[in-house]
Image 1 (cartoon, one colour):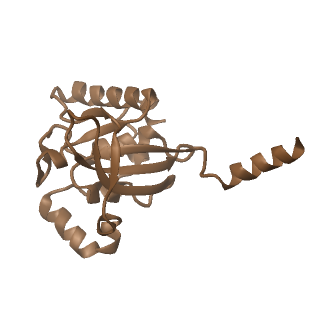
Image 2 (tube, helix red, strand yellow; image 1 turned 135 degrees about the vertical axis):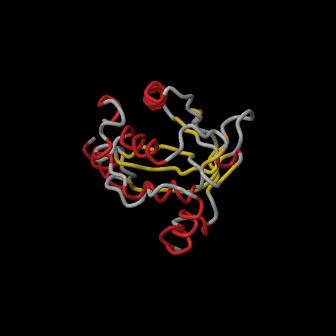
Amino acid sequence: MTGNILLLLGLLLLAPKAWATQAVFAGGSFWVMESLFADRPGIERIEAGWMQSGSQHQRRQVVRVDYDDNLIGYGDLLTLYWAAVDAFDKEGQFCDRGAEFSPALYVQSSLQQKWAQQSRAKLELESGREIGVRILPVGAFALGLPRHQQYAKRSPLLYAAYRRACGYPAGEGLKPDELAGVLPPAIVR
């Protein structure tokens, strides 16, 4: 019995962190979304790729973010997302046009669904305009090619020129603490 408990404890220590969770965001170019979440405390991994959830939904560029919810919450990630995208443009983001670049939140649980809906409704109410960001169930994720991973870090000059020419806001400087008023306190944490 003691041996089984020690084995179980050993496996738990070697297993991926149990408190890490995942979120998926589409907001135009996956390079821009990847850069938005990169190098933030609590972000453990970001993967650029494509997602399609169901046959009725188009394929979009997305980032899949693994995060430690003890250090950064889903609400914090939503706050960053809403501050970095044009929430009213459902046809793409900035110079990136078409279905592949249209914004969406892909939810994986009823809690993520609730937070995403509540934050979108709040923004819609405050602006008096229809929000173009869809909330969809997470689907099959297709990992992008290696050249698409960490593009901003690998090619900083090309990335900066692309971002500036395309009109994306400088989302890298966004800090959830500074955006605390954007979402209700119940959403942020």
